[in-house]
Image (cartoon, rainbow, N blue to C red):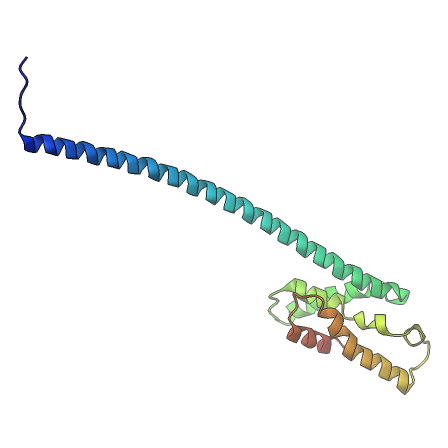
Length: 173
């Protein structure tokens, strides 16, 4: 069989076409590798996001447990007020909803209601448990404690902005 001589232009075209095909295959291989890498990054990001959501839930639960423990410590000083914070919280959230208030962050509201009597921890037992009417000096101790202690304690709860702490404190007593 005789070999056919192709013109130089066709040979150059074939070489160029072969080179382009090789380059295209190389690009496809690189793109596939990059796509696999992006898939791994996306999977890692989804896993990280799930872990962060779980940690945020755990932190929120821990935060509320701490608030409840602090409210319980306040109530433990006075058996007469047992579960008072829970009742105030339940009624307060219901009243807020019934009055049409938009409750953007119910947990913030719940914390405020639970901690509404936090100032009691700074009131001397002789005043807190007094059976009769308070005299003017005792009344002054309660009022000054309510005005000075609550924001300092509530400020430790960093999720509640300072201006909301003052607003919450004023609205509760």
